[in-house]
Image (spheres, rainbow, N blue to C red):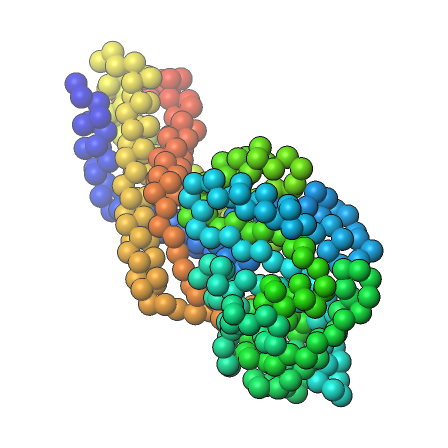
Length: 405
């Protein structure tokens, strides 16, 4: 006898109860799939956004740059020789999309009447990835010209508002030089930008890499950011660069972006609680389904036992029934969830900006085959677990009592 066919036919003996239980499983699978799709999309967005914002997949730094506090700006920056050595090592890498040097510095910006502290970035605008300009969104004017060595500046929207300046205004930048002195220069605002973070927009100033070097009177760089064509190649690229540049520090994006790990930890904790509640609910629901089935079919089960069918075989049939139940219910929920995710992605829905941010968030879902398989497998396992729990005492049941009317 084909016991799988027997289990399949038994599944539809009480169609109403089976369909209702499948519907409950489907709703749970739908919610789980949507939540997983959103969480994975959030992880991807934070990762790629952080990389494209200027961090890069891999950064080459002077040894100890992130740990040591220098008495002067760029005291532990990359020297010209180190930059040249890093450039040669990066040129030998496969899968490099672009590289960009950067300088981090701070100082004062003034309109002649008011002065505010700023956090500056020296940028090579012609070498940054396209995603860089999604993070540095120009609200008015334009971004920096690669050919301009020192007369242009792009400021954050909140900083421009506090200074009362706009595109075309001339401001003064003052900063400590790499030799311990003070240097100042006039610069014209060519653009006002937003990073999406109000706190950052109150302080950020972008100038060209050459302008930053001229202001700080140095030939050093804070970092060389390496952007790869595929994030999956990051570990291999970092290992190759570490071998080629033993005297320098090579850091990957996940070592530099603490926000990513915070977001991952937050969502994992939230989803763990959500998943635990769903699992308990579905486990109880499927256990109730199989217990009701056992009660209604006690004479059938006892007859099978009386004919010599082992208790383990009968138990296996019931386990197959709940496995089918979980498989079909989850599959239906996942299909609806996938269609919903595609529709919502196509709709381009924006959520309100969270506290501290000024840009709305695009509601996105990632369709992950691994996540789909995990949800499907989880509900099949729950079905098997429910049947195992519900049939624990099946072998001890008295056959004669089961056959009694």
